[in-house]
Length: 99
Image (cartoon, rainbow, N blue to C red; front, side, top):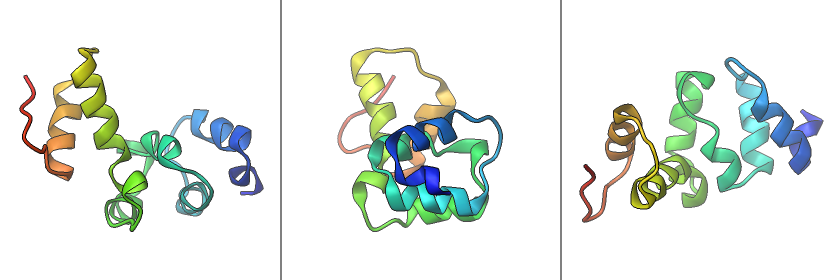
């Protein structure tokens, strides 16, 4: 968990495959930022950690993945319907609609 305190360590942890332990996710959230939070989604997290991120007091953490997907849509990058649906389900889509 000491690795989470350093940017290179966080990067290395996030490259690992499979589900991350809750304690590791907590350390990443404590030391990381919105860029770290973008990589914390889906099957990599337990339901408890998904709720923890959804309720996080810092909007940069809470909305990181949804903002990332919106940005990719705005840029016309490849995207999956699952990501688009997850983005709209987890936070307001403001006034934009996405194809």
